[in-house]
Length: 125
Image (cartoon, rainbow, N blue to C red; front, side, top):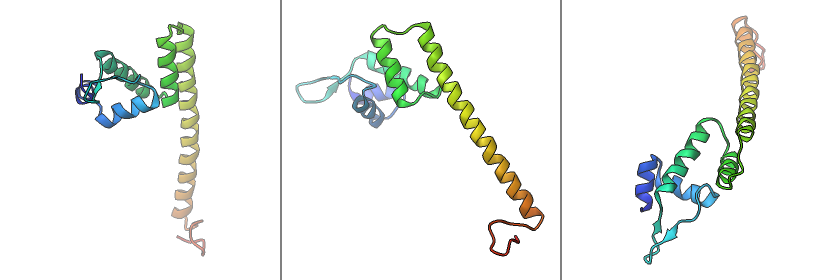
């Protein structure tokens, strides 16, 4: 299967397939005598798994780690839970940061609406 076919079936770009290969998400494919890459259907499934993990919030390094553990048969239910809990913790931290930013923006809006503005040298909006 050529790289374009893999990309189409996995619903990604050819550049994404090459990127995944460079980063180790995909193992290096066999090469045809012409030098073209020759992928197996397993490459499509691996890309789909990587994309599913990405949609769950996994970083690229976490995706690579999870796929390697899966390849080696080293994963357990506890491993999956730990990885997912790690993603939830990261999301919670992001939510907390966004709440702080939101509060700051609301405070600035309130200041501007009352005629005080920290962005103007005169202190007035």
